[in-house]
Each structure stands twice: as C-alpha cells, then as structure tokens.
Image (cartoon, rainbow, N blue to C red; front, side, top):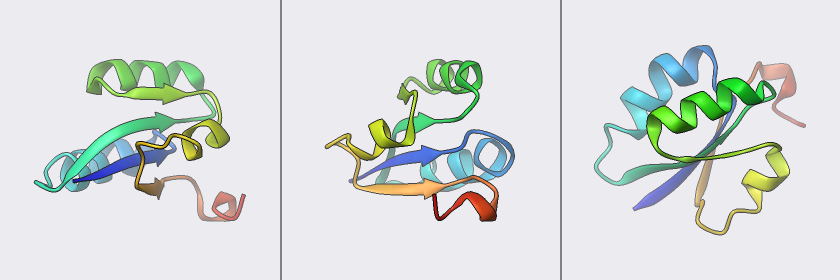
Length: 79
C-alpha cells in the first residue's frame, strides 16, 4: 500500500488526481493533505477523513507518507 500526501487541494487535485488516481487505486491510500488555504485543507481533509497539515514541512515529515503528489502551479514545485 502506498500512503500518499498531497500538496495543494485545488483544481486538478480535487477533480482528478485524488478521486480518479489515488482513491480509485487498489494499492493507494490518501493519508494527508496541505494547502496554503487552511480552510480548504481542513474542509477537504474532513470530507476525505484524512489528516491535514498547516505546512508542507509538516506533511513531508509524516513517517506514514510514502509518496507526494504536488498539485500546485508548476512554478511552485521547486519550493
């Protein structure tokens, strides 16, 4: 089982990546999310019954997470 963390909860993550990619895969589990808009992250985490974090650093430090999907605009990926 691959435990996923997602950075960015808007657009593509909400509509495609999370429901069609992570949640539908038999070998994947959404574990945690983070977004610069904390209210969006909290709401989405509640709906999906996963953890949310205030910062990317916290999400990246979660020992349960095996893989990260970066769902932010491309110019923010390096950060």
